[in-house]
Length: 288
Image (spheres, rainbow, N blue to C red):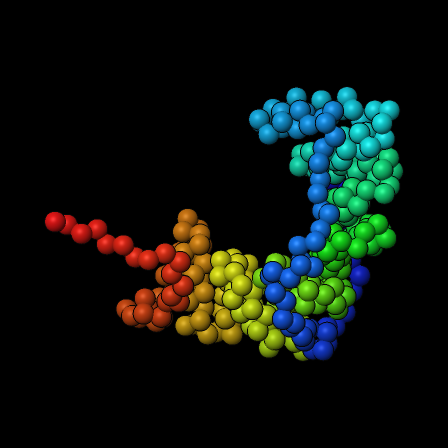
């Protein structure tokens, strides 16, 4: 694997940059459903993809290789894109980047290929190049799904590159425009706030927002637990670790955390558990 590019010094996040204003986005608004984000393989290689679906990974890979230099540029581009994704899954980072660059060169007007390149570059630690790829996408399409994915990728690239201020700016766009991503976006805004002394008090607000949209957002609960533990709030710490344990009952470290804080709270610690919303009625089997 290639080493990640040097990380620039982190910048201070101002409170104003994190104070995103919510808008009343409705899930049934037409604009949220109008999208051309659709990836369909050319018929010549559709059967090859089925080999992957059937678990014949090596056979699938080498079958795609036979179309790598096809005379039809769109067919060759699709094959190279598939090879790029498969290479990344195998940890072959340089090879993956080579394939996706070829896919974009063969079909430069394809927004899906450019979007995929952005995410592959992000996954390989090439944050600056990833941001450029996501920016290039915006010249190819204004489609909601494409733009949202590119904005999210750009935000993560800035964050991983150490620039929380710019990451927060990109996340604000998604926070106010894409209700489908709000749980993850709120978590990321909470994470950024928790890392900045001047904005730390805002972290719980965003994390609660994340959980209100997805009560099983593991990362948000985990961060809540760590923040509560840091603040020496034993009750909150117990509640959040117990919630994490309900989501991951095989985690031995969580079990130790629960035992530790249960002792501090005494025998009635169970009374302090969070109670999640019931999605199904409780049914008792009646014995005749």
